Length: 176
Length: 151
View 1 (cartoon, rainbow over the protein chains, first blue to last red):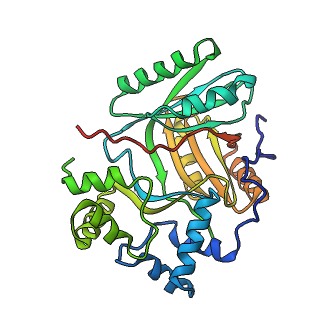
View 2 (cartoon, rainbow over the protein chains, first blue to last red; view 1 turned 30 degrees about the vertical axis):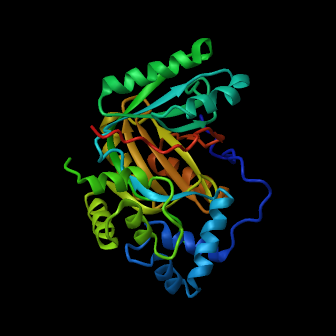
């Protein structure tokens, strides 16, 4: 069986910081579907959690500084905004070059996600994933060509997997 | 899509930094020169229409619990049944059908690595099909946001 399921490789974690505690976790659970749309949303969260608003904001700020929270933001739904052609481009690049090439692909403005993932030869030779969003298939393909040109001889093969249907999409789920 | 200038600004300008302040929506309103009530009602409308998936925190993958991208090559005639089975797991938050032999792509999350492995094994047992697990090794995306380029 072609699996690495037994040992998923952990992602690099931030510098030896203590893990999040119970209140951080409770805060994540409380905010995962979004902040309340009321004038003082952090106070509302604080009320739910039985702590004060200062504590809620301090903790969110700390999680942001530690990189656990990437950003606090209005998160657009690309698909509903008309970026309906979501192409997952997958690339086979030399392992010794991926550390240099990955950040360059990830910095392209039309790439929304760029990850190093394990290969599973022979079925799955690709080790670099770059998600491309566009309003047409042609535009997505044009963007993929830009990535291919950027990689040059390090593009040992690639494919684009267009989405046909969204079968399920919910926010982050975390059980308390 | 018919968006007001305020809605466009809310979508484009606050993808990164919603103010972490006592009254964040009032601060956004001040920045945009409108009232807090207008910001709140515009955000509520964008959310209802599904244009904003949420106003809140975006967490880095793997910072809490364990997760992996997973793929399956499902024969077309079994796709509906297998997709339904996979979607029933509360551990699955995204599931896309893609144009490829590996046609089912989903993300599995769990409290820890042990639970993640157990869920994947359970999925394989119940579908009778192997899963390609593609956990993240490194994230290269430099988060500059996404230019919505209104036309």
